[in-house]
Amino acid sequence: MGAPAAAVLDLQSIRRQFPALGLRVDGDPVVYLDNPAGTQVPQQVIDRTAEYWRSMNANHGGVFITSQRSDAMVDRTRYAAAAFLNASSPEEVIFGANMTTLTFAVSRAMAREFQPGDEIVLTRLEHDANISPWMALEERGVRVRFADIKVPECVLDLADLERQVNPRTRVVAITHASNAVGTIPDLKAVAQIAHRVGAWLWVDAVHYGPHGLIDVQAVDCDFLVCSSYKFYGPHLGLLYGKRDLLRRLRPYKVRPATEELPGRWETGTQNHECLAGLYGAFEYLADLGGSTAPERAAFERAAARIQAHEGALVARLIDGLLQLPGVKIYGITDGERLNQRAPTVSLRWDPHRPEDLSRWLARHQIFTWHGDHYAQVLIERLGLADRGGTLRIGIAHYNTASEIDLLLEVLAGFPGA
Ligand SMILES: Cc1ncc(COP(=O)(O)O)c(C=O)c1O
Image 1 (cartoon, rainbow, N blue to C red):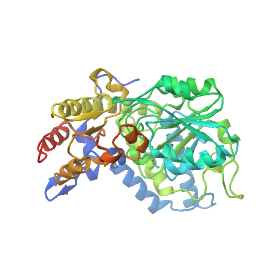
Image 2 (image 1 turned 180 degrees about the horizontal axis):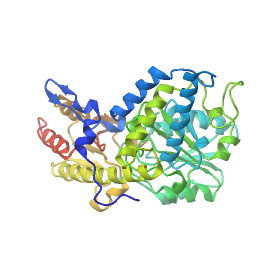
Image 3 (image 1 turned 90 degrees about the vertical axis):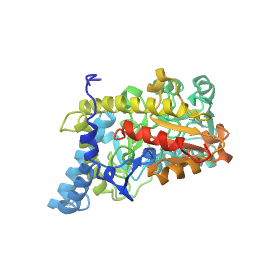
Image 4 (image 1 turned 30 degrees about the horizontal axis):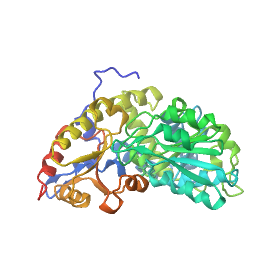
């Protein structure tokens, strides 16, 4: 990566750009550690969205100025998205409502080619949006298998993945980072295992997107999905697919809509104002990488800076949590291997219920999440399904060391602790 080691984030300037970070409740500042469920947005996203409403609000394909501006804006956003994902061409980038909707759409289209007895391999790390769409294909005779994890580190058991994958496997669908415990699996190794039997690699990068550099070419995935509301943008989903596959598969679409890429996959009218806002998110990230243009090199530098800052924060958080007697962290805690996890920490502090801990923190305007985080299969595997799941603390690059310290102090003061 191009970023010099000294290139650190200017937190003051960053935080000023996010109006929601200035929110106060009863005079107290709020602390957003609920980021895995969605991040706050910078002013640039708000401005680009408002600009859309003011000067280019129109449907696609008209011969008049607002429609032309709107189409030009969508094209610009698609170019920036291609750079963000490192797709080889913008036509490999499809926009949609969110990751879940895109996954249901493409998995159903894939199933038009599948035969009874074909198999899909998933892992026990997945968010359910990367499970239910594949299980829905069981009604067509497709079989779903799961590769296991090693507990309590919650790392993928690659040997088990190799055992599950076989010549009937059509898709290996795996997360880029677990939204519940943070694990980042070795996707290059998984790609090799999938491609050896001719299966497609489907990557869920929703949780990874705000924390690392997505690179569809380096991973060699066939498809990848992510959501911009997790990386400082509006509520939208993005799909990358290899061009030949996006051409070959037959989407469910209306007849008058184009058969060309990318339009054949973008059913109905797109959320133009959010696409304008998404461009603002790319501009913001590019700015973090020291550039005014949303280009690949800027995204690379931004990701390196974000990782350095978030890595320091998660180390501080884990150290502090482990000093609280009885706290158990699910996920990697080894300081030497923090690059194999996102800065998202799941814990139990028995006998306290995760919901009670989260409510206690919320009373102090510290926002966290509790429960299964829609990673039901994982939470069941950890034996926590009937016990309220985990407390999840999810760091983003706009968080500060003093926010982490405050969380640790308030948590330590939990009544009964
Ligand atoms: C890892 C992961 N995958 C998928 C999803 C679903 O994303 P979306 O809300 O865009 O459908 C989420 C949402 O939290 C997630 O964290």
